[in-house]
Structure formats: structure tokens, C-alpha cells
Length: 362
Image (cartoon, rainbow, N blue to C red; front, side, top):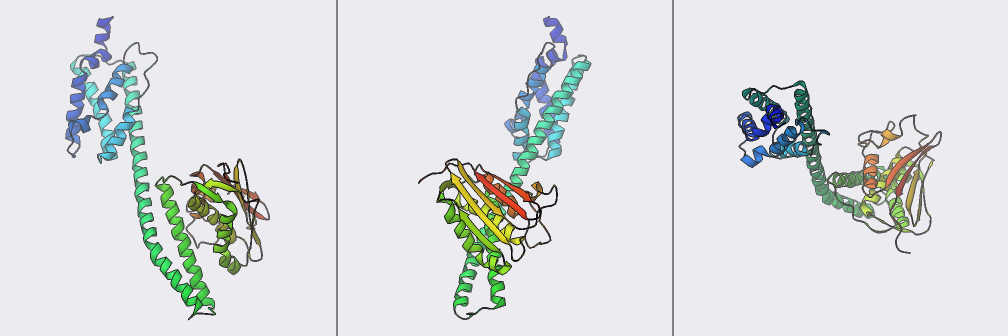
């Protein structure tokens, strides 16, 4: 039995494992330009080679499962600034080395062995490339979110100063205001809202952990109503707020406010003059539910889910960037909640936030 095993590809590769790894190392050093230490160069490849050898054992039933070595290898290659083509090339070179060692040893590669090698190398390559791509995309998203967050944060101070100056002018030199003053105030509010949205979006993309604290729903809703009152009056929309009881829940105030504010702003934006936007909240020991009902007239069939996709804008109004509902969903889901929409044909839509956090306090 031992003689048979030694004559197989499994036996050859097991006996010449170190030679196989050395063959691969030499080819890789010639294929990549970055200077690498031996540890960086080898990384998970020796362990991956052991997996291939084990899979080639004639009596390997069932086959050994992959251990994640290829995935970790792909992530490590990204950290070392390999490009994708170099990662792909590594597995091709490993295949070349296997063929060369088998040929030099005079070992015949059976159809079964060829299939097994192809299966293992293809799976390893797919795992490595997938992890490489996933980590690269996450890093790019993190960098973009940091950049957006930095810009938004830097804009907050001059904007706050501009709004404070506007209030002083409103009370003195510009008393009585008129249309230009109203437009300036609305523009400053819109910029402020956009900056808050950008900061929320950046925080969520960066994976910032929500900071939960006791929060009175009724207070949150009335604060939002005060913030959007001028806009509601300008649009001729009646905004109604109702909260059952004075329940206090555990939530992240900034994230929840961002979610509800975006829903309310969206509802007013698409409700015609003379209509009503109704915000209702209910809370009990099992959590909280917040509904925002608008008068948009309803949605076209099949358009419900795509409302929450980033950069998708609803209707003909293109004054925003189409991020409001996407940010609302991200903010709610970051706290373990859900957000959905129910179409009321001929009337409007009802957006619902469900928060599972149990009520705390009285």
C-alpha cells in the first residue's frame, strides 16, 4: 500500500512539499516588483499546499474542507498592495510548479488528480479574489466616508455662524424680511440638513457603534416639528404630530432623529399644497413604532423597495441627492430596527420605523 501511495501524485508532492513551496516562491519573487520578506511572501500558501496534498490522497473520502487560508491570503495581498492580476497569477504559478515537480519525478497525473488540482486551485483563487475585492471595497468606502465626514464637519462651523448672523439680521436690519430673506433662511436650513445627513451617512459607513441612551419619543418628534415648521408653512402642508403616552426608549438620538427627519422631510416634499403629513408614534414594553404618512398620491407598482436605494429620487423634484431614505434605513438598521413603506393607492404612503429596543424608565 505504501509503494502505491508513493507512486501517486499525492506521494510525490508530500515527499517534495518543501521543493514545491520553494519553486512557487522563486516564481513569485520574479513576478512581483514589491520587496517582500519570506514570511510575507509565503503567507498562507504552505498551508494551502497541505490542503491540496491532503485532497489528493487516494482514499481522501470525504474530501477535506477548505480552511480559509486562501481568503486570508487574499486579504494579506491587499495589505501588501498587490494588484488583482498578481493575486490571480500566484495560483497559476502554483499550478505550474505542481506540474513541473510531477514531471521531474516521473509521476503520472491521472484525470482524477487533474480534476482535484483544478478544483482546489479554482476554489482557492475564487476565495482569495473575493476576499481581496471585499476588503478593497470596504477600504474605499471607509476612505470616502472619512472624506465626506471631514468636509461636512468643517462646514458646520461657518454654517452655524451664518445662521446665527441671519437670525440677528432678521431681528434688526432685515426686520419684516420679505421673499429674499425667506429664501436665504430656507437655503441655510437645507445646507444644514444636508451636512447633518452627510455626517450620519459617513458615520454609518465607518461602522460607528450607535450610542444608545434614554430618549423620549414625543420630545424627539416635537423638536423635529419645530425644525420643519417654516418649510411646512412655505409648502402649505399641515404637519400633525401625535405620540401615545410619554414612552422613553433606548436609542441613538442622532441616528433616530436623522431617520425620522428624513422621512418627514420626504413626506412634505411630495405632498401637495393643502394636504396633511401625519407623524404618529407608539411605544410599549416591546419597543416603538413611528409612522410617517404623506399625501403623495401613491406609488407606481413595483417601486416600493427601490425607494430606499441610494441616489434614487422620487418624482420630478430633483432638489436633493436621493440619499434621504437610504440614510434613514441605514440609521434604523444600525440600531437593530427595521423600516418599510406601505402604499395607500390614491392617497399616499406610510413609512414605518420599528425599533425592538424595550422601553426603559416610567
